[in-house]
Length: 153
View 1 (cartoon, rainbow, N blue to C red):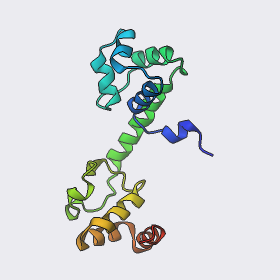
View 2 (view 1 turned 180 degrees about the horizontal axis):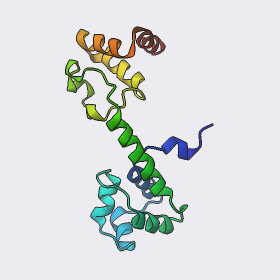
View 3 (view 1 turned 60 degrees about the vertical axis):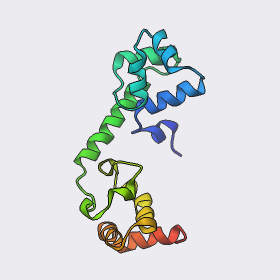
View 4 (view 1 turned 180 degrees about the vertical axis):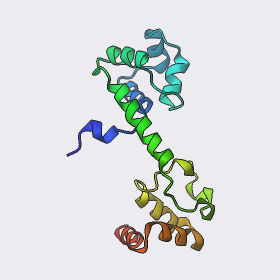
């Protein structure tokens, strides 16, 4: 059984903060001011445009009565995932995949290994023959067939 922390590991701390504030029905701007922080800082963090820093993390954790270090641990795991994505050069030939196929995300942000089911499913639902061949070459015929057959199509 996975713990809650293992499930959210690698997610930007701003996303978790956003969820926490919504659950507690706290307005970001007012909450930021109560911490003597600029509302734009909190908004940037919740939109994943900015990293969480130690000082702010401590203020937030104290104000929300959360475990000390929670947001910094999340930030660290997020940074590790980002670095792994940068180092991961194993990917399909992106010149053979139309960006419109992945209209809802940036292709360079896709984790081709972790998201293989979603990638294969999408390419085989919406892709052309060149794209299907490239994805089959990249993942292998066995994996592609297994995923397509398990999705009932």
